[in-house]
Image (tube, rainbow, N blue to C red; front, side, top):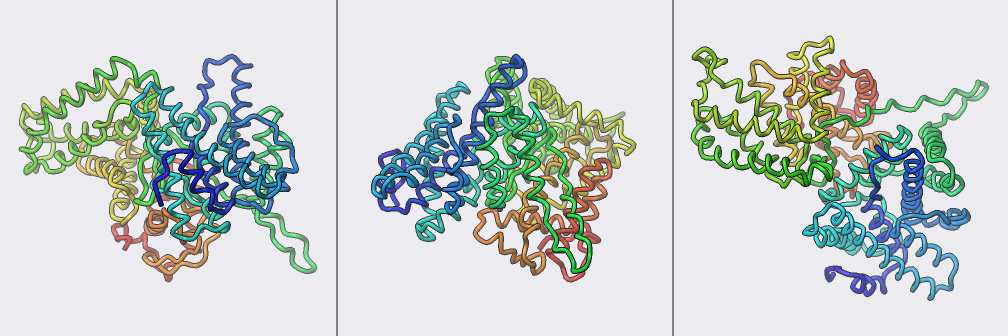
Length: 582
């Protein structure tokens, strides 16, 4: 296949392809670029309400575009409702393509559909470029537009490898939107929109969860998605809170699994819906990719990206890192753990300010600080008698780096919130030392499960694991970083495997899962690793969650479901906390 770079090349390729495959390409392109809206905070009430109506309309258009591509048998039913709402250009082009199929003679319909499909992909690439321009990042415009085209190329290769048929076009709709995980700009754009949604009202979770399921390629409930589109067509002009509440109730009704009543007995009440995981808090986020769970970029806002003080502080931090590179190589033989901690920190501070992952860098800095202080001389000796104190000049350079790091990282609101949450841990009944022990018990096994973490995510977990192990007097910041990363990791693993657990076939041991729903999923290895981790560490995870009742209730349900549907021959692996997943 020739590489697709523009509308003309795509139109030429589409000319010989089934219409279903063409519509699938367009719908997936539309979903890759979510709407870009201003933050609600500071807007007058009327403007905020209007902004939410626009957002609801855009999300409804994307949901409809996805449904008509995934379930073509329902197209006439879907288009039996009026679709006159505004929406994103790419999503509307997908609907125009389907409408042409339903209303025009075959030849004219196919020509109009292929034109609309090409326009939809172009509109997605243009939207990605516009986002780069909004962020005052002109150098990224071509890169981000090209990223959309590369994703289309990956979809085309997937189809060509399996055969370009209408059935494979529908199957394509159930794969992750990005074959190798979302690029940084797409992850950041979604993070900004997600925050705006959830800050407006909790009922927007019906959309954040829907989009994240599409992003990750989770299985979908066909009846629910068709019902969702029908409800949106009838209600889209109503108050967004009412519409989202209706969708929330619709999701709840479809989540329940009806039971067949027994003969001569009263119908059994429907089972309660499963517990829900806690909402995302501040801290590093993880997402399944073909290479394992990777950190999701949570970058600075536009103001911080262009702030002269932040840019200056970042340059100072990187200069101090460069100055320390030589001395840290010299102390590697006597302080291997500190050397490794420094090397991992270098990786998190190396990107530009615009590409900094704030929670990960905050956590890395907390780990490095406690490692340094554990080796600092105290009354002429190291805090740990078996460790040599650091040379005074190296210690001075490290402390200067950490001072500049603190000034830099605390210039981001996300870091301020992380500090606030960390300080709140001191108010719990659980001592900090015990929280640190529990967090490390959760983090350390992540490093031993093959295919669970990408290199970047593993570097973050390694930093926290080393610091929690070796620091004598752990600061609230380090414990907070460990607890936040452990919590977000558990939630990410659980959310990723839940759709497969609920509909899973039987499995054949930790190293031999045969869950049919994972076949063909590009993230299958990461999901299998997550299942292994949850099974191997069940009791440890529940002990960690004692301070968080919602997390504990959800984990109890999830671990029981995982063990019931993926039995390990009666073994209780988590009795051996250091057992390998393989």
